[in-house]
Length: 140
Image (cartoon, rainbow, N blue to C red; front, side):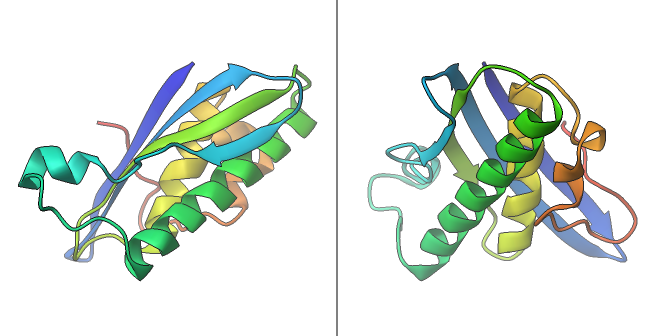
């Protein structure tokens, strides 16, 4: 199951943006992992010399992993189902409009979608998720 969530909001004139894509597969036990190149989209957008890695990317990757883990754990505890492995396959950011909270929010929603329900159906929507004032983002 593949899913993506794009947070794209302007609130009080300030943009809030992040996209997270996940893949969910049945597994022997619940797990969350980060795919091999979650920020690799930058090479396609900016060429082979694009900057990838460093503290900012590490923070976003960590935020996505924690959020996906939280969403999956809460979802599966509230909606019984088989174990799954959640893989964060892509994290797309904007250098001025994306913070770690935005990535957490998008990761929670992408994980919930991949597992087949809305985060509104679970406490995951309230956990570690940054909700900009005025709205909860949309998938465009």
